Length: 375
Image (cartoon, rainbow, N blue to C red; front, side, top):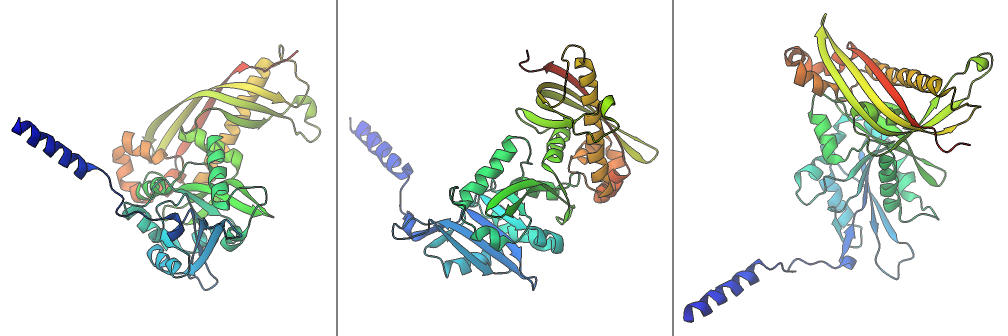
């Protein structure tokens, strides 16, 4: 009986020891929770950090608090933020990290400023990484009247674009992987402030050192995801078509299709000192709209062939554009390393140049599953 009481007491003691406590609790009023972080360069090429935090005081007229400091690192910026913000700066809730185009064009060393986000276990590796085409200060100072807090609006905007397969899914952890891997070059979502609105414009392609090189439109981004084998759910595309009777005048005919399923196969070879990539895409689509006279019974086969031809031209143009800039956002270097390692090994440190000389052929095969509700 005595042993049972001892064992029971030990169990209760262990339970109390394992129970989570609140010794390190912090009231919201005492914290400045950074939801959005911005990094830019000033005219003297000094790094400038911006932060936006929600305000929980009823007396405050604004529901957000912005701050701007000049610092050499993210850690130093936190110290300066603490010197002017209402509460203790908390960086573990950062949802979006914004970097300016000016910073990406002029200084590849900006990547070092993200070290704190990778190294500190309290930070979030899932923070979205986005490039801003324009002045960072203009973006942080805007207050859309019909939107929630700017930090929440930007986060939701980025997530919506990614969900619609018109934006790459690059967070700070994924960006670090792309920078460290020699078989792929980084790509991040790009947005711009227009009037009093924020608009996602496409994807920024960066060099292997993290400097800005060129941009892709929203449509090109969708094609990029297709070639990366990373699209999820439905993907809507507008494909231009050319009809024989319209060759003598400007052609604006287009077909909107929804990609419901697809399968990608890539064959990797090496011959005559060049890598060879043969990309086969089997795609099942549904026609959403056709903006020209169309006979669904007699012209269905023609439309399927026309879509295949136009999509092949668009995919080939995207690949050629990336090769001209010595970029491989598709990650085909990963496949070259896996299947042609002996050829990959000598060129791994200059994969961009090797990919520029590679022979890449893409062959889509479209099958129309449905033409939509018609009379």
